[in-house]
Amino acid sequence: MTSSEEYKRQIMKDLAEGNVESLDDARSDSTTEYENFDDFAQRTTTDQRRQLFGRSVHPDRIPTSQMEPELQKAIAQIKPNERDDVARAFFKHLKSRGLDERHLEQQLGLSTHHASRMSADDVSKLASFVYHNHPDVFREVLAEQPGIIKFLSNPIVAGIIGIAAAKWLGSRK
Image 1 (cartoon, rainbow, N blue to C red):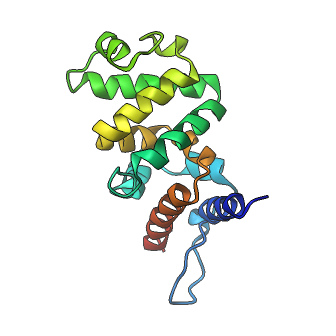
Image 2 (cartoon, helix red, strand yellow; image 1 turned 90 degrees about the horizontal axis):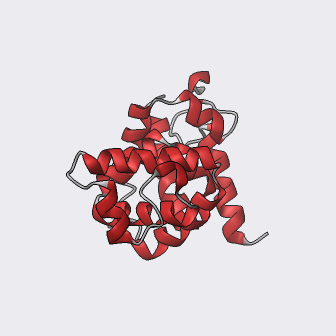
């Protein structure tokens, strides 16, 4: 296992367990201790995750050149029904900004504009476009569909998300 994989695994483990550095020795509240990432994703609300990702998931903090390959790998690993949900969420938010699915299909070179028929590559292209051009929509969809996060492997990406999570979890004590 490479040090990058070990680092990512530790960040995600800390995130899932709610481990944060604290100046006091106060015992942690059991409501902020998580068994694993899936437990974290299920027990936190969309609003809590939205607050967590705040400004930390943004092209200014994580360059597109590092996020795009991560998104491709992560989206390829999520279940097809979750991938459909991610695509639907992106389209829904973009539509509210006046961008329709057919236009995006042509602009991004997608194989279809139907979320349920999109390949992992299509969803990756869509996610990269949104991350670069509409980071607030990207964060919103990440908060709604957190399954992508557990498959991010780049230490910088995982680290920034982990730092944001640690700050959020620390503020909950």
